Length: 268
Image (tube, rainbow, N blue to C red; front, side):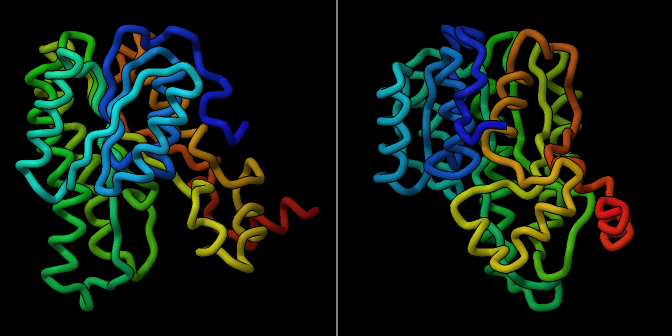
């Protein structure tokens, strides 16, 4: 899979549509924004940091796409509402909302403080609900809400609370929204990425990078392109009968029960 998230874009698949991608100043969100633009959507890039957000917009425009940057803090309900209102003022509606903004703390359930809880829950969970709440008021039939979760929703590790709890909650939120919005012709799905090669990945893995690649059945980490391709598919007319689902994008990593046994098998 190419690292460039626009490499396999389907031309004009999202022509004349409007996509809002939260947390899209870098990483997965930036890749998703670039892919929607490459498929013809007008994209709203949003996040707290102005300079990287404007850089993503410039990349999209240099490639011939349409995008604008709107600064918004996903912990602030007023800024979330303003984000959607400004989008509608600019483009008239919201066809696709990608809830992608996320943070985490390296804390256990016993170590986490109320501030840690608020920081993660308000950014990674409450904002998803509030963005959808405001966006669907301006979303036509055929619209899509995509909630970005994680493989931590199903399998996790110590020291990532409440991030891992919230990611599981996102899957439940998606199911609830899908039931409520289905009669309005709006689909809602979760994307659950695994290890994705973004800015901080190599630094986090360090000497374990090659080992981590090897324990993936596909033999590599994912890229934002892997996630972006699924996102634009789920928002397309080809996926109008897919809703309420939580789809792993993890190169088969979650199917490995025991790493040492699997590695022995691979190395035979």
